[in-house]
Image (cartoon, rainbow, N blue to C red; front, side):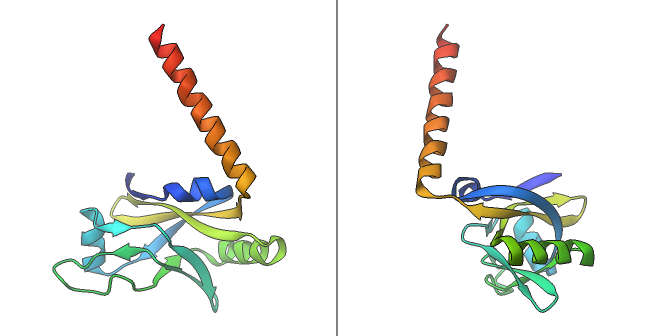
Length: 143
């Protein structure tokens, strides 16, 4: 497994509850651009269209000028997983957040999570915990 993209804002802005692994349906030029790291996962989101799930905002730069960088991509999940995700989104008011993109063998995979948005005070607590951990690490390393 070779990680290509990571969505750092997802862990800060959302409380991640349950994760799923989905395949990405890409063209040949898109996979080439993804392998050389010309892609961005920021501001991307997943949604249902009919019975399929798509991701929008996953920007993959064109390889040699071929392709549309902002094309919506189909996510490959089995029907049971799609039904489970759709049911939880409708019941609990959760959202689907893409967390990371990686290669598993020759296939591009994406990790998506069911997430609940954090409030401002939760974000402040996350910042405080991160700062305390960093200060503790500094103190331990000095001794």
